[in-house]
Every structure is written in structure tokens, then in C-alpha cells.
Image (cartoon, rainbow, N blue to C red):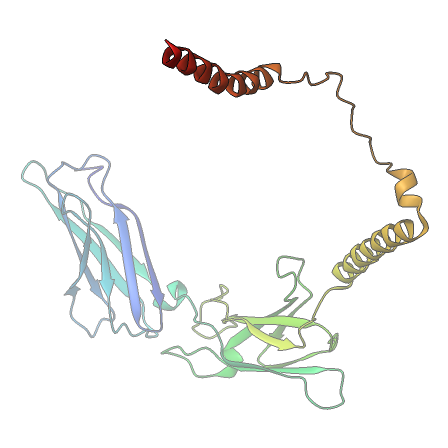
Length: 287
């Protein structure tokens, strides 16, 4: 039935011999539709079904993972069939040159030699490892060099070279630290002409201890602090500190403290009481 075949079929080869293929279900495919992928790498080989399907949440096959894929100089045939209890499913097929879908790995053994008295750096590398071509003339390379201090800035030096596996970096500054990476693309032969993966960054040059702008700011801060300390010390030694910051006198107490007359009265009463008791006792005896 029209509209039941898969759509957006695509494949990519990576890491030399691995391949992933994916697709979307047909627009009018019933909900119970299941898909099956078959491929034939050459006319001499038999058609083989996918061995490791990628499934969605409903268990429907939506992709396939391949291992040990070999790119040959022949075209490869892919076909995706489908089955459903409710409808006939239209098949989808496509012929693909496998080298055109290969994502090239990065160049190998990337080095930067900046030794000696020369002001240049010699950048060297080896071609990417792929299964179907071992000729250096089949590749071109892009060399990208940036300052490590600001890797997001505009590229410091970009160079595209054909066939050669070395490059001379002439703008080398010994006081700078650089990041180097290289990628490859096909140049004729049966190699994908799209740019491949970047190599891991390689550092070369000398790391700056501190940038000039930061150094200037630090010097200004230190000078300001020293000036403040010397000013305070000078003012204290010469008396200007007291003149600038005079001591505030304490306020006088406007209320006078009244004498504690109650305590004095009690003391007098205590001194009189014993004499009175003696007089009373003498009077009683005389009676």
C-alpha cells in the first residue's frame, strides 16, 4: 500500500568497520507494522538480514547496527520490507556506494616539533586508518592551530594540504601555548570527500605564567595598597591622624546622685535600740 514504506533511510560507517542504518516508519503504516532490513554488499555475496536491530518503545525495528563492514569497489544494495496483519507493506530499496557514507577517522600520530634555534614548527601526522585505501594521494588535510589561552577565538592558522603529511608553522611564538588539530577528507580514489573527524588536540609551545593585562592589574592593586598603608603611617607619626579624626569627649552626667538617707537612719536606730532595752531591765529589778 502507498505510504506504508519506510522513509528517511540513512546509513553511516565509522571507526573503520562499524555501520549504523536508521529509518522512520511509513506515514500510513498500521501500528503493528514490523520492518526487516536486508543488504547485499556485492553481487557475489548473498543477501543478509540485519543481525542487531535498533527498536523503539513499541518494539518496532527502526534501525540496524552492523559490525565488520568492508568497503568494496562495488555498490551495495539495501532493502527494507515490512509486515502487518492489517495491510500490505510497501518495500523500500536503495543502492549506496559505501565509501560515500564513511565518516573518516582522524589522522594518526599528530606531532609538533619546535626544537632547535629555528622559529618554525614542523607539524607531522599519518593518514587516517581506513579499510579500503592505503594511498597517501587519496587524502587532503586541514591543519588548525589556535592559541590555548583563547581557543574560541578566530583560527590562528589554517592550512589545507594535498597528499603531504607535514606542515611548517611559521608564526610560532615561543612565549605562547598552542592547540593543534588535523582532519582529513578524500581527494579522489574511493574515499569520502566530506571532512572527517578532528584529531585530539595536541599542545605545543610554552605556557605563559601570566598575561600582560592581568599583570598590570595586579601591579596597580599592589601600588594602591602600599600608598594607603604609607599614608596612614605618615599621618600617625606626624599627628595629622588626630587632627583628621579628633577624639569625641564623653557627655557629662546631668543627674546628681542623692545620698542614701535610708541606710543612715537604719544605722542610727540600730545603735539606739540596745540602750533602751537595758533601761527597761533596770526598772523591773528596782520594783
